[in-house]
Length: 362
Image (cartoon, rainbow, N blue to C red; front, side, top):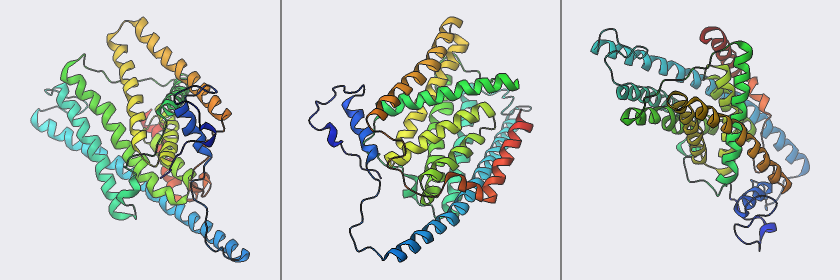
């Protein structure tokens, strides 16, 4: 876990006062990025040649480790897809038994509340069973999930930057859909009442909690011994590809990289859950306004989100870098991110998911 302390440069500055464009609380968290993650070694150092041999052996061990960890994350992602498909088919079969002709695709005779509840069961069941699969068959422990209180972090810095990154990716995704002729699909939402609340739980709360637990918790925890770079990249790529949609997958990948970085910096997946929930809530709001608000109001809100957060996020990063902030500071050293593709299983699953999304889904 990263222990973040106030920067010596900020000592004596009045709390909450602006300097260089960032609040004092944000400035202290940003300045802490230059502090090393691992404390200095004060014991007796080995001879120079022996130290070099140890370094080479550690690098080789990490290289072997990244292949195994990345391969198992890839297999677990296929397990997730399989379990989700089986649960979907099981629920559809049970619905058909209760009301002939009914299924998840055609919920004849079932209320909106029931349909949202079924979606919750399928999503939680798929992620829960995949987690059990990983905990039983790998060295992954509950501590590796980092479901703990985070070190001090700055929501005032991370939230606008994250939303800016997400909306930039949304713009790029819209451009991809325009070039490829893909259609943007949105699920119809109820106008209000308990039905709308259940849909909010199924589409916003459950993914924010369960997906962060699986990808930034389990997948990233399994990859962490190989270094922060590989631990961030490998789960984020699988997270994007498992959306089985090029535009949505791009947004999910970019968001996954940021949330993975935040998990490494804060030592917890709880901040990522919060940011994930806020982003899902804003998407839920724009979807609702698209159906039930005047066109001008809906368009105005979407345009504001797409333009304001990217610009404001860039402004925050620019001022933070002026104060010495670096995204790479405080991360665990390890293998290069491309080392994950030395795993045949990981590479094969990535190719399979890309081909499946391009050919079978579109």
